[in-house]
Every structure is written in C-alpha cells, then in structure tokens.
Amino acid sequence: MNLMLNTQILAPAAVLVAWSLVMMVWVVATRFPAFKAAGIDLTVAPPGGRYPDVEPTMPPRVNWVAHNYNHLMEQPTIFYPLVVILAITGAPDAAIWWAWAYTSFRILHSLWQTLVNTVPVRFLLFMCSNVCLLALSYFALRMTLG
Image (cartoon, rainbow, N blue to C red):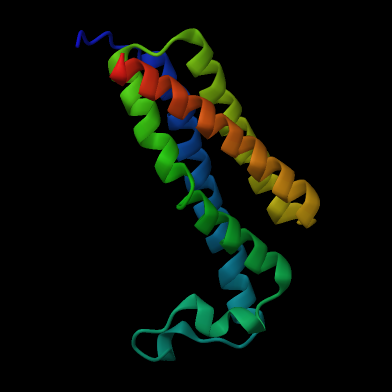
C-alpha cells in the first residue's frame, strides 16, 4: 500500500479535541460553584468519592454539561482513529467534508445538550453524527482494503 498522507482531515479532529477541552473547562466552571451551593466540601470528601455519588443533588443544567463531556469521551473514540487512517491513506475530499460535518454535529450536540437538552433534537444531532461516522468508515475501508 502506498502511503499518501493528507493532513487536512486532521483539522476537524483537532477542532473536536479543542472543543472537548472547552467542555472540560465548562464542567469545572459549573460543577464547583454547584458543589459550594450544595454545601459539598471536597476537602472532607471520603476517599474514592465520584461525581455520581453527588449527581442527584446537583442542578440539572450542571449535570447536562457533565453528561455531554462524558459523551465527548465516548463516540469520538471511533472518529479519531478513522481520521488517522484516512490521513495516512490519503483522504479524498469527500471524507474531509464528512469529518467536518461530524465535528460540527458534535459541537451542535454539545451546545444543544448543555443549553436546551430536549431529547428529539439531541437525538437527531446524535444520529446525524452517526451517519458521518458511517461515511468515514466507508472511506477508511475503501482506502485500506483497496
């Protein structure tokens, strides 16, 4: 197999990484004030304590941000290796478009889930991102299997 590096497809992945870090900061910015308002003192928390232990006491909007951050650590784990495969094998322009579409849908999904969080729209955005993954998977298979 001839390697035909196309780094353009890495840009949407880099943007999604940066967005994930924005969401991580958003989690911290919402969670710690909520802890304080709920009277939770992290300095006296028992060893091994986890967010799910206090999640029921947190406001829904705080949980929405945390849930979305977790989502960004789940499904995109399929996206990242796909773009690496496509970068190495020489991604066609159509694959780059699908990668940008995926990143856009994930960012829209994040904003919707953290700000509005109605399930029908959130599910539609999730399904659109899945269609993008299917397309990217097709391109990765085509490029690697010949």
